[in-house]
Image (cartoon, rainbow, N blue to C red; front, side):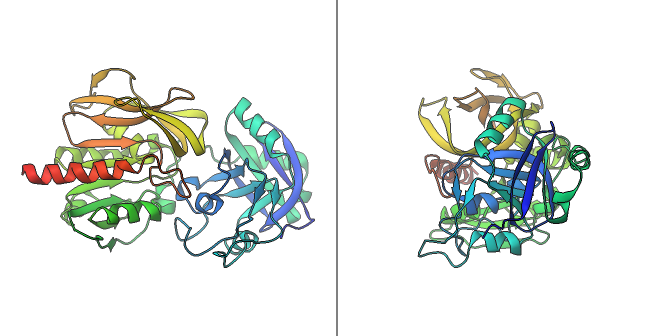
Length: 379
């Protein structure tokens, strides 16, 4: 239940939005972003890709269906802070075994409610994603100038490597479901549970590896393929992961990357990355498959993108043969997928395993499975 205690959201440009404390009381600092999904708030909160970010939900009512033990994408809530217009006062769903308010308190997530989230969203869209802070409890009584100075002294998302904050520290394995077709080494850069379930359901033994692994440690699990997951932070600050991926590609192992994994494949192939003004987040982003012309409605959470030429086949600057942009965002023409034509590697910027949806892009897991089966048959 939200309290009547005051709280304030402060943006880097000096904008202030006064509301009510929600969840844990105290101070939260992070990059302010907005998510447009009308459902799936539990999956958003537990997506490790949101680490370091204060997430604002554009849907006005949040918390109606409570929380349960099934829909979480990881072991905890990862957002730095949480913003909603009107949290639900009651939980109404047969699957719920707790309230969102209680989970925010349990995981120490500082939130704010009762503000005009439309105004905040418009501000972010106009000015771009920026540093921000939520102040409640004793911190709500700090001087306005002091609060703004605290926000402006916070870390920028550009240049931050957050993989170590969200990755597992010990390797573990999920067994294949149904007919086993091989094994896949998953570099956990902030992987979601649903990704692992989809890979397992395609017949892979899934070896989840810490983000610190070396090529020798990857090869020690005898993988038939390698997968790079989603995750938070700036791909430009992940040189070690890029070097590892280049070594994997030289080994000839099939590769599939999602979100952060797409950005790191782009870098491994020799392309650059850049920060988007306010990123893509939510579950309604239209993306076109360049090869088929098919439009998919997709789930996103990324603030960086690959800088690769659209509409042409180009040579990989890093020497991995021909590359094409396979998917493009129809809202702003941002690269949403890469396909290597001379090595078995592809990636997408969005989340084909989206929960609570949409599921237009599930076929990409089948494509990965087929690629691995073809590669094994050719040996």
